[in-house]
Length: 514
Image (cartoon, rainbow, N blue to C red; front, side, top):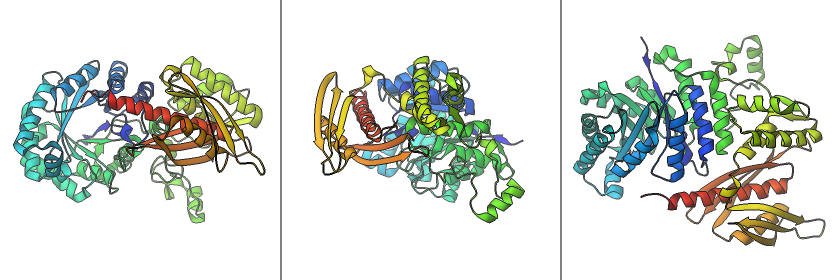
């Protein structure tokens, strides 16, 4: 009988560490519901001690999401573990995931501890966690650069203390597939007790091997794979969970394993994560990219018209791709908009639905028809707005003067921490001018480092979709998106959203307990 592979989703923890991808508690809850619909086995919902926001998100997910185990991350500190337990204890299936680095470079440069001290701390932390929670996962961080024998020593200590899952992470994406598979085989051979535990892997994509390493580990005996939707995460990201799923499903003849997911929810989950994080999906992305089921070459088109199996090893329907854009007119109404957005994974309160519907009708009055991508962009824009009381900065009013022979000039009125402030500036163009006017108020602590503008759909009345990246003085990046029929307004709103994200991140750092 094929063994069952446990799918551990860390989109809301490791994935959220993608530069600029910070999510609100409400957005995390929306994604968690969709992950449950997809059928993942474990949701790592956050790092509870990192901030009040992270704690609240993990707690709410534990209280509201049924089906998957709900996991929180904790260092090998008793305060971390207690805080984690306080958040996950409401779940039907709670899990504490504790970790400590084990590679020589981490011991020497970061922890400044001996190997023996780390073994003792790992044992103590796992035992402390097991006194609170029946399901404890342990990770030797940077394990792919840890000596094989020392890895086995640490794992043995964690198992003796009661760990139920042992995770082997390639934290910096260093391993090669056969090498990583050999590490799993060595562990199983040298530490027989691990055969009674779940053997997990967590691979990063710095060399582009995260999915390959994860799959090689399955062939070597791993029974849990950790990853993120769309492969998001720190640096080059994590193993893309949708790619892992479809490898295991499409090539069941090769892997001879089973997974418990509903693959038809993959596309919806991917789009939802992209919409709420603001991180786009490359057109050529495997499984969920726009080109994944497109055929341009003539010989390919001829083959697909004869039989889709000639060039498609999986069908669009298998992953929930439903074809071309749905079009809605101004008479379609709230229910049609609500049904479309619900199918895409959005969970809207009545006020949000009214705002979205009104925007759709305004656009339909001008365009006659509104495409699905327009509606999703409007919904993303509205649902990603912070509540007014949480906004450090709000755009109240702006004017831009430009024309033949005139230097573009802009003035803005902002509400900054509850106080009205006015700024003005010139620029090389109207967007540069409005950006400079905002910076004249905010100051040099943030800098616009990337700006991208595209029309969501064709036509002269198309919505402008503006993506921006801001950098603070420490090099941290903050991404934001905004849409509007007015390109200048969309640009100003995008910058304001980015500033609010940066401010929230700074608050999060200052509120950390460690």
